[in-house]
Image (spheres, rainbow, N blue to C red):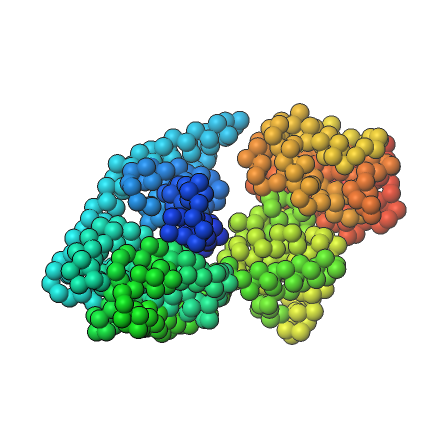
Length: 628
């Protein structure tokens, strides 16, 4: 049960934490510009309502869908969230947390069912229309069913709070109020229940405790202070700023996401709320009017004469109890949170690693796999079919040559790295994405997928682990060097081309792939975008331009083209390519050519390569790339 709650909390956190910046922006705008704010501004205050009603729920809905199924899931999740926003008059944060993931799951299931039955060339049409139609259906369902359900929940909570107050059990009302606040129903309960009761009591006795039941910032303050001291990652880093907005700005909504991502903290704010109300009744505290917003400054301004000590004590007691309970839960899960969430410390480590990598070093993460335990190494790049495949092939050949055939080395796209990968090698520019995709692994980041010291690092580790190289006749997992027919055609080996810019050379390779029926036209732009992001020059005078992951859907079938530029194409001031191998990979069909490329870059002599750079016979290059 506890593990399930932790998983649920992490899932909520994954939806909310990436959007904390938007909550903070909204909190600042609200605290500054509303009529009761620090510097009231009628025009800028107009931002508050739309941001709360539309911006924040939409961001949460998109992120919820994205967590489930990437950008495509995020789009459908945002569309579905629009239906719940329109269907109610209160901010639909919880509704977004429901509809966002539902949208992601729905489009994911559709794609899994339809991916093998979409006719070639119709992928984009089907993808766009399926997302639009499915998102529209979910938006209508959210408007018709989820919205009324949330409205009923709001009415029910208000009635329950009123019943507890009528029964004279005032401190216990926080057992309902605090969870209701976390569901973003605070304004409905405060202004719908407590303000009318408080106005009546204030007219009779000059002050009312009802004005301070929901507006007491103590319970939320305790949670945020506990995160500031004992939390990890982004939660700890952003909590101090949230303290200022919550306590002095009076925007309680800023702490709700911190509770939602660890649901057991509801117990902390409930305990703090009960303590605060009990202290108020015991010391005869109260306000003369509602504190709006519920900041400590507003509470002091609305405090009745003679009630200052009672009100300050109520805030302090609520904060103290909430902090104590929150600290227990946060410290108990800190280790797991540090490993499983995208922590701030991890980002800082990534930055240090990338700086080291920029100096030409392979960088090891803080986790380190013992040599005797190394069994699965993953090479990861954006698309998982070009640079990473080449790097994996090169490392695999070196390891197998030394007898380590028990070690599996495979290439993957970031987003598809297996959870049992022990070591992940990726480009320094992809470090954060790779780490987020495989937090369980040790990470090595490089500037070049083929010219690096990854083998030296792993080889030393293997020797240090006392591993004896298995017999050379062991199995292994090398891919076949026999190309399937049609992947590389002799007509697609072009020699004697005049030097052009790298963009023109890449475009020419893409045009040849397109004319040969391997890709759709859109793939060419993806090749250029890939080059702008990370160079596809691999060393030894060879470049392997290929599309980024976003355009893999435009690959019709696996194909390759080889283009020779005797005088070279400048890929940078230091790197000149004479052979440009355009790759369009579908599945694993192209891995045989990648294995041969690894052989060429490692084992061909400089003299052999010079012949390849200048030969006028396409057959020479065709044999070189196909026979291995």
